[in-house]
Length: 236
Ligand SMILES: Nc1ncnc2c1ncn2[C@@H]1O[C@H](COP(=O)(O)OP(=O)(O)OP(=O)(O)O)[C@@H](O)[C@H]1O
Image (cartoon, rainbow, N blue to C red; front, side, top):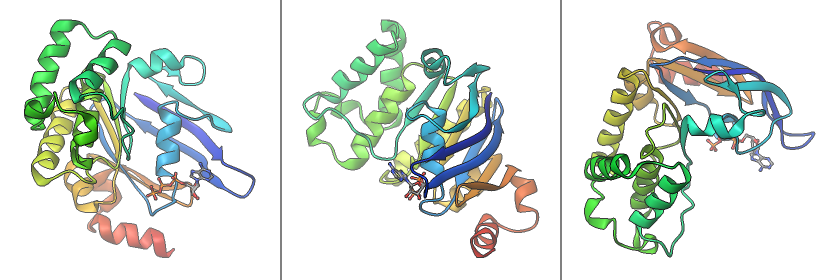
C-alpha cells in the first residue's frame, strides 16, 4: 500500500506544485493519474519514489516512510521516468545487469526476467546493441525491463506509453494488468484518457497541484466518460 498524507511540494514561494495532497493506493490497484501539463503529476510521482524532498506531509510505502527509510522503500518499487536517462556507452543487457546488481537480483531470477520481458517487449535481439543506437521507444523498453527485473511489488510510471509502438503498448498494458491481478500496485500518469478509462480500476485528477477527484473509476465517472470529467475540472 502507498499512503500519501498531506503532501505539499514548493519549488519556490511562487510555485506550489503540489498542495496538501492525500491519496491511498491499495494492493491490486491500477491507478491512473491525470492532469493538464504542469498540474503536479511528475512532482507527486518524484516525491513518492524519493527522487526529491517535499515541504510538508508524509509518504508511506508498505508502511515505511520514504523520508526515514528510503532504501527499504525503494526496494519495494520500480520507477520508470518519462524521459529515460541511460548510459549510451553500455549495451541494453549491460545496463539491465547494472540495475540488477544494484538490487542484488539473483542470477536465476534475472535471467528468467530478462528472457520474459525481453521477449514480451520485443527487445531480445537488441540486447547486445549499444544504447546509443536505440530509438526513443527502444530506450523506454530497456528502462521497463530494467525496472521489472527485480520483481518489485509496486510499479510507478510517468507517462509510460509515450513513444511506445502499438505492440509494446499492448504488452505493457498486459504486464500492468497481470501485476495488479497478482496483488501488485501500478500507479501511472498519462494524458491518454481512453487508456486510463479502460485499464484503471481507480483514477485521480490533479489540477493546479490539488487533487480534485479520486477513487474508483466507476464512481469518479458515474454516467460520464473521463474526457467529460477532465474537461469539467479544467473549466471549473
Ligand atoms: N525543477 C523545477 N523547478 C521549478 N518549478 C518546477 C520544477 N519542476 C516542475 N516545476 C513546476 O511545478 C509545477 C508542476 O510541474 P510537474 O512537472 O509536476 O507537472 P506535470 O503534471 O507532471 O506536467 P506535464 O504533464 O507537463 O509533465 C509546474 O508549475 C512546473 O512549472
